[in-house]
Image (cartoon, rainbow, N blue to C red; front, side, top):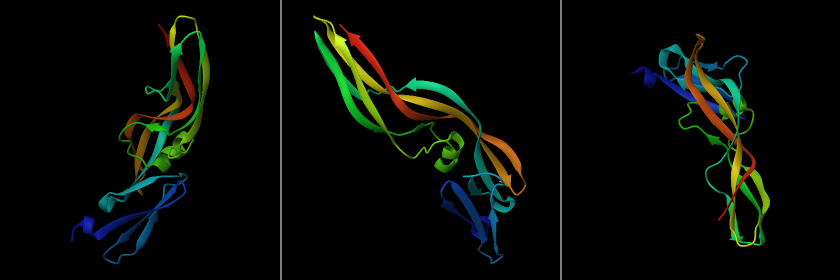
Length: 180
């Protein structure tokens, strides 16, 4: 029987904390592995050596940015006032292929990355007589950059698994106005 057949890893998630129980199929008993002092760690079977835990390190703010896709638009010929009044639901935008659970990411960046937020889009712009104006709204995001750290349990051997991943939380609206 191979080591992969002998060990089965089962994760049980309670809130943002993940507890991993590795159980031997050969009846050798069970052991619990948890990273001391950490919340929301990921665990994966690495065979004989133990489990791998993950957490975010070097978490830093990277400011705000406006989204690229419009969420609302109003246009018309002046003299008139363009007005947008809507509410939209938008979620967190994450880097691709982050090797950490959403619970670990949430604990590291400080907000729940699985929940959407309601964004109120409210703005107006006066279009001068004889001009054609377009008012476009985009989601405004606040971002954090981070590295994913992994370590082998119980040996406590640590390494950086991924660098410069990002998470952006919707915080408001950016407007762009154009006229011709």
